[in-house]
Each structure stands twice: as structure tokens, then as C-alpha cells.
View 1 (spheres, rainbow, N blue to C red):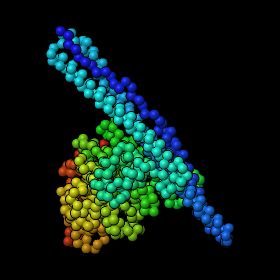
View 2 (cartoon, rainbow, N blue to C red; view 1 turned 90 degrees about the vertical axis):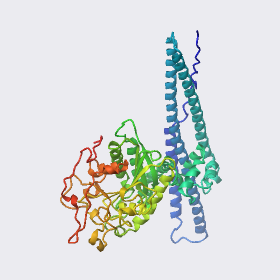
View 3 (cartoon, rainbow, N blue to C red; view 1 turned 180 degrees about the horizontal axis):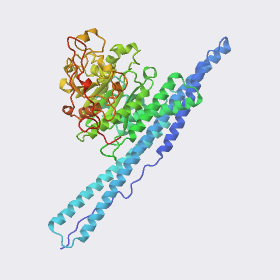
Length: 591
């Protein structure tokens, strides 16, 4: 008896690679950013030269009007050329994604073809196949046909996305192909982007993070690419938007700043603020290079990648606002948001991104295998140091706490159906900021970690923070001078700190071991205050366990206390610190 088994054809016959050169597009964008810088230079110089001392009369008035017009027109052209350059940058970024997706499809087709060839070989080799074997052959054929059908649909979708990316680039150029469009206020935004941004719920319109998320979900892929290219400032700071979208938009602005201000720097025309912006941009670039190259400690083939979640290098007179994550904020099971303290600005971006790699590694290496993302967040104006009067008050912490609470709301809103286990970590003045952000709010964070804290701000007890005392943790190195400034017991009546000492019995949080193995014999504000996230430390091990959702496994330390007869006592002062011991410190794969 002859049995016929239909073997599906290998389709599609050919997977077309997206045309174009992302590197060439980047080079064009750099040229355009440089040109925009030249237009800005001319506009600035024309404005500066309007006042020419004692010259007066009709001729001088005519000169002032002409120079003012030239300045305005060149400023408008700078806006237009920057917009076009950003569109080219977005095109290049999308093209890279499309090429990567094409390569994945090629691998899928190769796998299906191998399965098809093996099925044919197995059928040809079967001389007296049983009914069960025949049924298995048919099932393999059906699965193969389904696989090819899915591949065809994925290829069709890829081709559609390629067309949309090319169409958007064409519209970017066409939106300002006349002089009047080029000199318009918005620099000729493509209609698809303008229409999308005018819908209810768009970021920057006062919409809530939840409304912003629904707005984004209602956009087509082409509209999303269009608004990223045309409105990167608003997308890059859009609370409620996916982290990936914010990252794409912020990287567009980063490329803009690096190329445009770099060209002005070459010409020697940077203002002092622009010089700081360029330095901040360089820090963000270097941090992303490091984060993008970082490999997972458990799987060297996995690169969790970096995310530029917030980028505002001109904020706070050039101190800047920034947030860089290691890992996938949109899908990771465990997410940590770390807020730094005094003396922190955007020039510290690479340092803190490296600390986030340490935390990612500790969480993964000592964890239960869940996915992780760790983010350094500097979204407030941190005091400049001990001589800054703002350091002695809670004003910046209170304002920063509101900003941090908004950021956490944005993260939560972007993942309504897949909420992460979220830990808020605050160091030094950032711990006071974190206490303000999580005070009385039971829904936003799952864990709170305060390290090197000068005081818990508005919280007099761990139960005053949102997740409750069972989920509030404190790390304090006994030699950390800053961490003894918090109010404790009767000494607290002096009011020299920024709230209750969170390591104290009065506050009653879970204190974990956080001594530095190389600690000195006296209190200081150096390593004792800055090493909480260093590799192979007690503190990093314990924080990693908390971020992983296993706070019950920390190595607890006794709380400090304040007897009636004298100053506060820290029971950890005489304990010998540990390092590089499994279960007691951060034993990692990387050295």
C-alpha cells in the first residue's frame, strides 16, 4: 500500500535583506548636525553684533533689522536641519533593527529547511512504516507547513516595516523642501507625526502616565517611528511609554548633541552651558557603550543592553538629569531604581552605570534566575556638597521625591499587565529623597532600601513607607560618618539630621550587614560612605537578594540604639567584616 504525505515547499523562496546602509545614514546625520551647528553659530553671532556702540541713525536701524532677520532665519534653519538629522538618525536606528530581524528570519528559514530535508530523508528511509510512524510524519509535515506560513507572514511584516521606514525618511525630507517650510516655527514636521502628537493622551499634554500609555498603544508602528524622529524630547521623557521607545528617542537627542555641539566646540564657539551639555552627553555616551557591551554573569552570550530612560543634559543649569538602566526595563521580572545623593550630576553617569552593572550581577549571580534590570536615576537637583546650604535641609529631597514618585508611576504605567517586582534604593541624600517618594504610598514599590542615610525625611518609622516595615531595609557602615547624622533617640531632639536614622531601633527597619572589609578605625565620608555598591561587599550581596525578591535571606545586622546615658551605639562597630564568601558577600563571576 502506498501512503502519500504532502511535504510543504520551502517558502518564501528568497528573504530580501533591507536595502540601505545604517552607517552611511549615521554619517549623513552627523553632517547635518554639524550644519545645524553652523547655522546656530551664525544666528548667535548676528544677535551678538546688533549692538555696535555709538553707531546711530537710519543706516544703523536698517542694519539692526537686517541682522535680526538673518539671525532669526538662521536659527529657524538650524531647527529644520536638526529635525531632518534626527529623522535620519531614527531611520538608521530602525534600519539596524530591520536588518537584525531579517537575519533572524534567515536563521528561522534555515532551521525549517533543515527540518524539511530531514523529514524527506526519514520518509524515504521508511520501508515498512507503522500507522504511528505515518501519523508522526504527517504531524511533522503539518508543523512544518505552519512554520513556513508564520515565516511568510513575518517576512511580509518585515517588508511592510521597511517600506514605512523609507516612506518616513522621504517625508522627513519633503516636509521642509521649500524655503517657507524650512523657516517655519516647527521646521516642517511630517504630517503623520504632527497628527499623532495632536491626539489626546500625547506626552507633554498634561496627560497621566496611563493615558500616555493608551495613546502609544493606539499608534501604528509608522506613527511611533514618526513621533520618535520628530518629537524626541517629548517621547524621551514620556512617563507611561515603553522604556524602549524612550531609549530610542533619547539616543536621537544624544547623537544630536554630540555631533552638533562637537562641531561648535571645534570652532571654539561653545557657550559655558553648551560646554557642560557636551560633557554630559559624552558621559551618557560612554555609559551606554559600557552598558551595551556588558554580558550577563550567568550567560555570557546574553547582553542585557543599556537603556537611556531619561536624558536632559541642560537641566539645573547644566547639572543635568539622566537615568541609565542595565537590562530590559520593559520585561525584566526584578527592577531596581537607585537614587544617588549629594555631589551627583551628569558627570557621574559612567560611575553610577558601572554600579548598576555590579547590582545587576549580584542580583543575577546570587538570585533565583529571574530576569533583572537596574537603573541609576538622577531626576532631581542633588545638593552640591557639605558647603551647599541645600544639603542641610530636606527641600531638594522633597522635590526630588515627587519627581521620583512620578518616574516610578511612569514605569508602573508602562507595564500594566506585567508588573515587575520593583525596589527603590536611595543612597545618602538620595535615601531621604527615596523616603519622600515612597512615603505613605502602598502601591508603587515592593521594597525600599536606604543606604548611607542621613535621615528618612518624613518617615518616623519604617511602617510610614509604602510597602510597610517588613519590606524596608537599611544598610549602614559603622564607619560611615554621613549615616550617623540621622536623628536617633534623645540625641534626635537636637535636629541635626534629615529625619530619623533608619538604622535605629526607633525606625525599626530590617538592617543588613554592610561593613567594608577595608574599613578604617574611624568614621569618614570616603570609602565608608561610597562603597555600598562595590563588588565583593556585604552590602551589595544583601541588596542583590532584596532586588531578587528574597529579602528574607539577607544577613541581618542589629539595629543601632541610643541609651539614655549617652550617644548612639552601633553594635556593628566591633564585628569583623566579610568578603568573597558565598551567602555573606557578593561572590560574582566577574573580577
